[in-house]
Amino acid sequence: MDPLSQALLGGVVAHAAAGRKLGLRAAGWGALAGAFPDIDVAFGLFADDIAQLQLHRGITHSLFFAPVVGSIAGWCFWRRDQLKGETSSLLSWLAVFVLALLSHPLLDACTPYGTQLLAPFSDARIAWHAVPIIEPLYTGILLGGILLLRYAGRFGWLVSLLTLVLSSEYLLWGWALNQQAIDLAQRQLVRDGVVDTQVYAFPTFFQMPLRRVVAMNERQIYVGFITLDQACDIAWEVQTRMAHPAIDALRATRAGKVFHWFASGLVAEQVRSTKHGFITQMSDLRYGKSTDVSRDMWGVRGGFDAEGNALGEAGLYYGDMSLSMDDVVAVWQAAYPDEGAPCVGITAIAGNG
Image 1 (cartoon, one colour):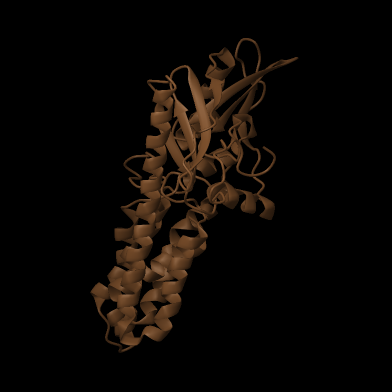
Image 2: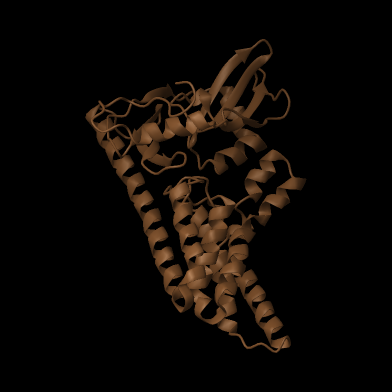
């Protein structure tokens, strides 16, 4: 999730656990620890685009990272207090760093991006699809709790605890919305005679009710949007899944293998002819402002001749990633239609539909 939310959550968690012993120091150092796992972004400065997909949300986001690094950091801060002649609790300092560091990957796992919670023992990308990467209301809950600590006095720990409970309930609500979107999509598909599909739903941008829905079977891919504020029929856009030697060739490249893993297999593949052969692209179905998968946000692309030989190295590309203020307004209007407005299938949530 965004760095501000991660820092705020780290501060709230640390203060709820150790604020009675360490006061506002728990919130301050907890905020830094809560943001720290994204240090892995710096690793990518020395790697290509494909390696960056593997590095981010990797080992620093593992459930095994926080107990090790947090324990070392907690002991160092406790020892520093001892050397300064100050009395502090080792257990409190351990709680600050271990729990704040742990809060980061758990929050990231609530987004669609995917987090390697079990690294280095497994590279499985875990995502619970509860909340967008940026969600202002969730951030506002955490910020409000942190600001109240200044005035809460000896009841500050209670404020941080209540903030943690409220923000966690908000995430659970987001997860429940996602399950509701999946259920509604499955019912509509069955009603329309579409069976044997695997259905997924994903948060979109800056709000909770509007979900991107993807259904896949061996033959076709269905993409649509639904707002749980007004559950209208989904206006599916259907793409036939292609079988082509150039697709197989892209899948066999390093870029294709890594991106397929990165997107948890939720990809759409397209081929177009050129005078030299074929251009093949693999798009991430989890993200997009339109049901048209060709207007994707990112993917990998490569050129191949008629025999499937690479015409250069396949690599990452970026598509429609712009987001203007008009787009933000359009997203909110799609998420929260006017009361009494007729049901309209959503084919685009921002930009030109």
